[in-house]
Image (cartoon, rainbow, N blue to C red; front, side, top):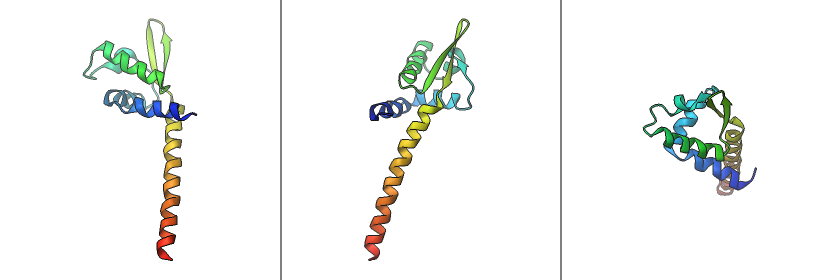
Length: 105
């Protein structure tokens, strides 16, 4: 995955409303737009805009279900973000180990 795509994931997750949407979807259940936008403190149109930002970042997927549209979390995108953070952690662990070894000599 490109760095631009990973940046889009983190950008999408950086908004409190979008983060709340992701939390609501985190149990693996797909929710319709109405259920998902309930009690977000924004209009239904505002919720749709936030969901579209998550779709653009490939954090969620939309699935038509009759007259409704179900929203489902795409865990693969979140895993790619997690893999990026894990790689950064490994780099820092190596640097800290090298620093520790240097200072102990």
